[in-house]
Image (cartoon, rainbow, N blue to C red; front, side, top):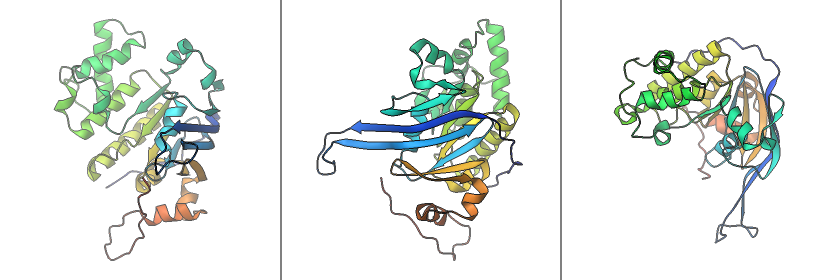
Length: 285
C-alpha cells in the first residue's frame, strides 16, 4: 500500500473541544452484565481538535471510538460532558440550530452503502444534500454534482446510476462526495477504509489527504489501522475501554509510545517481512 505523506500542516485555534464526555448504555444484565446493568462505552473523555488538524482516534474494536465520534456530532445523546464547536456548546443547541450546524459537521461511514437509499440515484443522493445549501435549480445542482464527482475522482456522467452498481471503494468516494456537498468544516471519518482491500485503502487515504489540504478540513479519523493513521494524522489519541489512555503528536507516539497498551497496538501492526515476529492482541470485543 503506497501512501503519500504530506508536510506537517499549520495548526490554528481549536475548532472542537471535548470535555469529560461520557456515554453509558443500559443493558439487561445477565452473566456478563455488571450489577449496575450499565455499559460504560465512553468515560470522561477530553481532547481538542485544532482548525485544519487531523486527529486520529485509535483502539481495538469496542473501545468506544465510533461512539465518541457520534456523540460529538450529536447523532446520539451523551450521558454527560460537553462538546464545543467553534465556541458553541453543541449539546445546548435547540433542534433547529443543530440542524443548521450539521451543514458544518459531517460523517463518512465505514461503508456508506447502508446509509444510501438504494432507490435513489447518485444524482439524487448528492442533490438532496445540495438542497441544504440552497441550490434549488436543476442546472446549479447538476453543475455542482459534476464538480463533486470530479473532486472525488469519479466519472461525472454517473448521476443516473444506483449505489449497488459500484464497488466498495467507489461507494466510499460517493459517500465522501455527499459529505462534501454541504461544504462542511469538520468531518468524522469512521473507519472509512477498513472494509476495503489494501490498494483501494491507499487510494482513499490519498484522496482524503488531498481533500483535507485543498479544503482545509478539520477531521477526526477513527481507525484500528495504525499504519494508515501514521500517514494521515497530525496527532493520535488512543482509546481503551472507553477512556483516552494516551494522546500525542503522531511522530512522537509512533517513535516513543508511553503506555503499554499503545506499545501493544504498535507491535500488532503487520509488517512485510514474514520472518519478523509481531505480538498480537487478543480480541476484546
